[in-house]
Length: 320
Ligand code: BJW
Ligand code: ZN
Image (cartoon, rainbow, N blue to C red; front, side, top):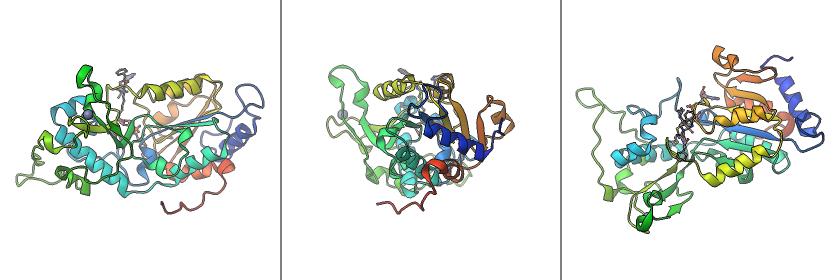
């Protein structure tokens, strides 16, 4: 049994999977690789994660307390400031070699052989030209907007939504946040974080159809993920054995996303974790026999680990 962090052994497994000689189902059938990505994939681009020591999304508020429908209902202005800031920081950085390596992996395999589930809402995988047919953005996108009326029943229902809206600022009231200023970071004269001025509802992004409030097209705690998307993922998972499960830069604490790791294991997958913490005592305790764990940055590790299939990753081209 190779060591959990044996790069050559992982690469040999990848070659065998791609050639059909390692397979958990019928010999000769197409390989099947699933990936679950999280905020750690984008960390090397300069975006903060949610949990752990590198977490520093917004100085004075716990991001987990802002990413809820309750927080938005209580103070939509505060939550919109948070997302305007996040939109700006995501647009200000570039995809890294990890995003490009996964995009190249997708192009190197037959259609339907690779499915990449990302929990990230930062748009960096699409900007790395990850083929959309193998990418599922489980938690939505910072750049999608939808009317709060989509959650209402009856005559107040409104189905307005828009994808890939990169306007900055969305409205003048969010201009400071949209310049990348963390307005919570400054201190009052007494050293306390400032109370941000209230933004009236009518100054926040408005639905052009029904004039209700628009909200970010992300999935908050307690909200259902896109059911069509989940159906498609579940069908892919159920369609046969899975050879390899890549778990990349995620704490795997949030469900239903994290549940796909065990589902892949049940479908026969060897699990390879790529995470700064993968070789911590806790990380190693979670390993099953034959699993891999590579402790380090996804941006450094993915191009090396995937090289047998993607070749030497070219310097990322300048984005169009
Ligand atoms: C590096 C690195 C480097 C750093 N290289 N690595 C089952 C059990 C228990 C609870 C539940 C359950 N099922 C559902 C729940 C409830 C809840 C949940 O999971 N709670 C848990 C916290 C316990 N789930 C939900 O509410 C979900 N909805 C749902 O289940 O609905 C049911 C329903 C059905 C029908 C009707 C109604 C409801 C929704 C979950 C939505 C999550 N949303 C967020 C916010 C998105 C918007 C935004 O961005 O603001 O998604 S929360 C946040 O966490 C975000 C992330 O996508 C998600 C995951 O975080 P991620 O990506 O793993 O980041 P971190 O920070 O946790 O980890 C980073 C990792 O990277 C670390 O490990 C580092 O070590 C590593 N790292 N640098 C490699 N360079
Ligand atoms: Zn509307």
